Image 1 (cartoon, rainbow, N blue to C red):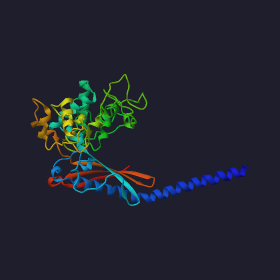
Image 2 (cartoon, rainbow, N blue to C red):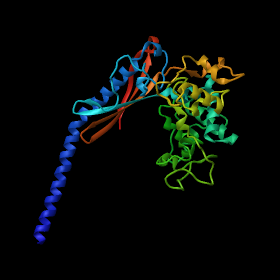
Image 3 (cartoon, rainbow, N blue to C red):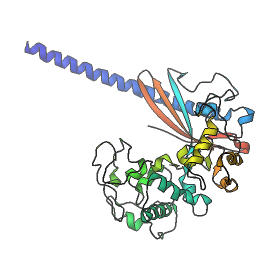
Image 4 (cartoon, rainbow, N blue to C red):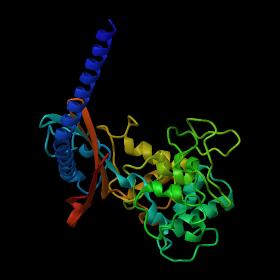
Length: 358
């Protein structure tokens, strides 16, 4: 009996091992196919962004085909799906998100640009109320992107970051990924993600800090960042900023990003959103009324509302898009990403400038 049990265990172990090896061999075979499926998804996204009906060629809005909208005038070519598209031995799903629905942090953190005051508004919306803390975060972001070797009054350069554990240098250049904000003096995970965000563990470089606004050593409440003894941040910086793009697109922006425009408040931003979404109040549907130019904002600002200066902050077009491609063959899945930019005359030249996968 013991011999039978031992032999059965050995056979079972061999079967599991062979099954695992066969699965790994199959997945290796799928890798090349998956990559081409991912690249094909990027090409499909480029096609979707290039094909718009004539009356919508000069705007980008959430009711258009590329954004998953259902406008009758969403695309010149009918019956082109972006979801569960059969391709080779599997299928792909393509999701396109414009970067201009959020504020470009590099544009905002440039003292030579009028968008500079957006940063103060954003910190207040996040829930940072202490003037000294606002000044520290603002100056530190400016120092992070500024190539100058000298720090601002409340900012930080490499001499500050090299005393952290682990030490690192100040970027002294543009922010390439919005998560770089977590490296900057004064920005805690709560401020970056928001107090109620979950499943975002503290990174290695956030486990110890120094200076006036140290990063927390741990999350005392477990899954989320919420702690009754600490300030509450209802909005995270990651909800308001991206690391690329241009002026804010008022046809795709959320109410949280719209109300950061100087001179606008939450009521005005809600009025803009209500007018844009049409009678049903839902973005991306047939009755949407996208704005054709920034001057149309005057309809929503009420008495005394001025739109002239708003052209420095907003647009009705988007020029940089993140494309997510979910590829699947049998039960093997992989997610690919691409950054697609629009340029050329009339903004009709769509190019992929970055392709990567997880």
